[in-house]
Length: 190
Ligand code: ADP
Image 1 (cartoon, protein in one colour):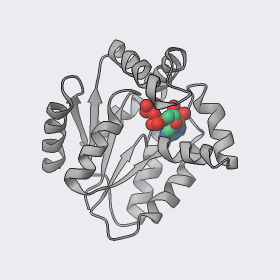
Image 2 (cartoon, rainbow, N blue to C red):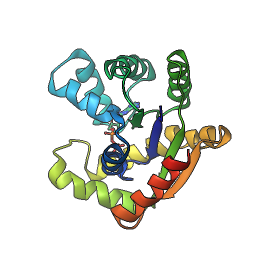
Image 3 (tube, rainbow, N blue to C red):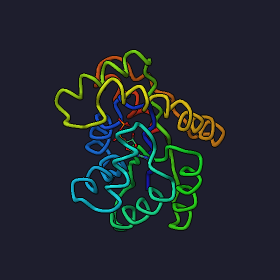
């Protein structure tokens, strides 16, 4: 099993690079943002609760997201070469829960691919994506809140994974292909 976390700020290219990683390595994709958007589209209780946080640029509470992650993980079955976690973990509590969850299942995280992108570029990309994504959180105002949530609650995770010796820093500016070439090397070496 090769389990990968793709880590970075909103707009850093996690979704785009995840697709390329899946094609190359055949990993199962778990995007918590996509899972939450599906819950919203289906009008579930979880979706209703999540939407309030998402539209405000805040994180959905850990307890909700950790429960759903465990069931999504088990729904992928046992015959997969690994998982790419996209948008999860986003807090230290989530990272600890993920470690425990994988350990119970006899596996672990192999590498955390950290996409590093400058802040001005992030806002630009999110606003640009908002023209076609249909996402109610892809606007300049919510993007600023999402970024401050990222810096306060998620960025501390970088240190957590550096200490575990799993963090691979990748420059997330430049062409999609050149960024992917660096990611590919980091995953192959993990
Ligand atoms: P992005 O990384 O571009 O902000 P995502 O689709 O990953 O987009 O996430 C959209 C929103 O969904 C987040 O702003 C947050 O409100 C919620 N969300 C996604 N993943 C998590 C998570 N692991 N923990 C808490 N909230 C989450």
